[in-house]
Length: 249
Picture 1 (cartoon, rainbow, N blue to C red):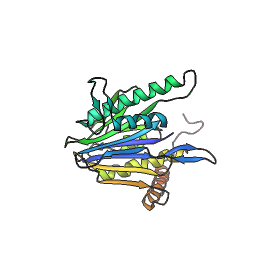
Picture 2 (cartoon, rainbow, N blue to C red; picture 1 turned 90 degrees about the vertical axis):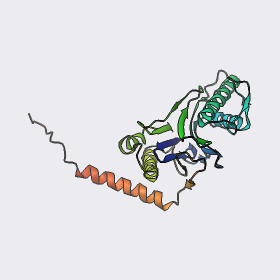
Picture 3 (cartoon, rainbow, N blue to C red; picture 1 turned 90 degrees about the horizontal axis):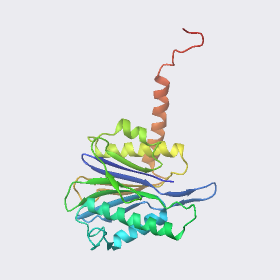
Picture 4 (cartoon, rainbow, N blue to C red; picture 1 turned 45 degrees about the vertical axis):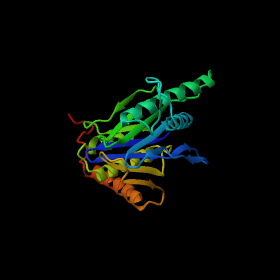
């Protein structure tokens, strides 16, 4: 299991992804799930992945090196896509092809090759956009009314995003909200864990403002985690107890 979130606010894009791929009593493994292509001032394509690693690895390899696009018959890749929308479409086609190929090789097995991805960024100065790509190759776009998309273990981190995040939220405040979302998720699911990879890109920019890994020694994350737990306990204690009592009419 994994958890990845993309936050698209007025000032820019924040993407966060954990790195845990397996969590057992004596076997914890990690893998980078936030991949960055371009980041050269002309093209920034950030991709966060959840689901089958074999599917996402094969799909991103194909999308990066190029393949015959089904709709044009031309060789295209992440590096030639003229827009971030086209990049998301190409990645979706690569995921669909990779999943279909692997399912064909393992007919009759119960192996799940499904995958979902977040694709965000900007190409050629266009407005920054964010998409959620499904294993079938289709995708949806993030919008101002709900300025985030999640993949993986989404349920524990969703409430803070719904309550605290708006399109007008400052980009670094969005980072804080995103990390609280991760803190809540990791508190309830051991299959999600540090390190967390973080990307911040200003709106319309094709160079990331920050690419950073938050690991077990990160003082800010530990302080945030403790403060959030303390604040929740204080908020719970400050609410009056319910008036319901046995025998009351």
